Length: 431
Image (cartoon, rainbow, N blue to C red; front, side, top):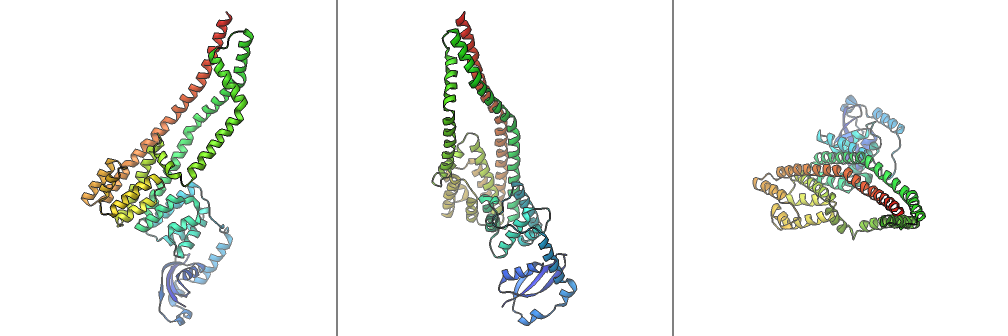
């Protein structure tokens, strides 16, 4: 059975060295974990097996593994058991996990010690269980990105793809830091959107209430007034009466049709065969299309800058950036660029030949190719499109409330005008 020499940290911060007998490296790591030791260095040694029973002076003087192990076991029994299966996290927990891990990796810690440190934190809640599970999987030789997929669905495909790109380039801390910034920005945008929609929501509810009053009370009274006067029903009143009668009779059918249309649309866009068409449609939406495109440019350029800046070949960086792209239409465009770069064309020429990328982006990349500093050019382009994205979002937020106000004003104003006009026409007819 192989013999492994280790250098590890105890829970009290003391350094201990020694040798353990294990079938393989993952088993050796598990043995150290049961003893409450965090490995700093672990390697297989060719020393004879008899050394296992020898007691090293350094171990005796520096730390006492047995008491530490017993304390660790006692602490583990006091903690809540680790839940089975995937663990769902809130967005705030995902952001906290990403920030904590990126900070520790940026400070020089390796991935496993960083996860171990998060596991020992008392205030992290569910993240302790997530860190524990990810660390166990990573210790068995599985990639960090694959471990994320197994442990929690809350990280999502984009998060896992970016983590894989960070692992491949050695810039996992930078990738996670940018992903944390993106998640926080997205959370802030949703919070701002909710706050901005509170007043329009009250307007919509008020408009619906007024419409119900018109249909159920005012229009029947208007009809009775016109019929009792013996006058001819004006065109405006006839329109309102027809709408009122139709809704009274068929409101359930209308509601069912609306719900059925929503279910059909969701089933259509979730079908794998229709997802490319839906992704193309999203890029052409009046307000959301530019936001989706700008977000793609920011993510694509930032990922490429990190990968290329950390020494990854351009073709491999493009492949990883393509894998991190969720929109199938944009991914197809990147597939064409990858094929052309693989055939020997320059990056900027491949973008020009594709025809789906803006001239400004291509010019900035071309300058980077000429100067030999393509990573810096990519990062500058990402910053520029990040500003464009912020402008697009502010534009949407500024248009939400006026749009709702105009729609409600047209709806209520039209109904009020038709009713008042009908009343005046009826009075004129009575005279």
